[in-house]
Length: 342
Ligand code: GDP
Image (cartoon, rainbow, N blue to C red; front, side):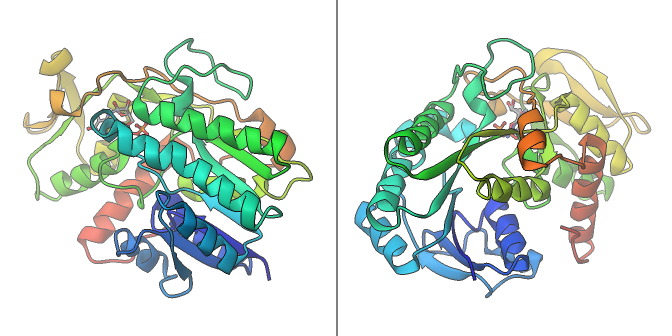
């Protein structure tokens, strides 16, 4: 039986990957800081109690070594992070400690205690920043635009470096936005899906958002964890873009999600005065607030996952409209106390 250690296993990707690996017959060890933040995800997936819990804090190097030495994993997936871009502008030091130096601590732990283990780093499309608008691939230059992206850039290159200099099987998945009903509520897709369902049901009047013009490549997280596993099954370690290749604006996402919740929106005004108005009733359902703007946002992110298709045999199947529908249906089911399809 193969053994996997997943850091941040109570987050969206960690929870999906836990289920995926349990179904493959792995022993799954979930590493996280103590507490039960995110435990609801394991409950909704029906895998609560099936993941062996290991206390692990990316700020604590001796603790990391002890955890790795006790688990002796075959595969390590690192999802533990301060993962919210906006927060990184107000907590840059914490973001660097966890996302950057934390990965150094983890890779040192691997080198010292389990150098045969295969290591997957959740790298990010945010590395690319706003330079150029063409589809990004594995050879595109990085221009990070947030403390989050800068911290992840260090982790990305350190992962490459341990592969090159320490003979560790270490890989980066350069993940474009991947969403699901298990996303945290602070991320735009889940925030909108939740608000649209509540507004559709008459439980909420409106929602405030930030930059409507941001363009993103949104895939379905459930499918991305399959790709991450494939990354670690190859004869040689390497880095891969994981993306759908489709791009839509935040405004489009909102319109599609609200339509799926039974609310047809019309857009009126511009800039901070732009509003999404219910076409049937004239009531304002979406407004723009400075609070959700970032000091620097990435204008457009779209990825070219041709290498993942060619080498890993992976291709995302769930695209924008279907993803929006899945997310709204999940929120409506939650409101109705029904089981969520995940
Ligand atoms: P990220 O790409 O990992 O930062 O994922 P997010 O879901 O947090 O943000 C995706 C894009 O949506 C970014 O360009 C944000 O600026 C934009 N956005 C617009 N309104 C909002 C909002 O209300 N919340 C969040 N989180 N993002 C928003």
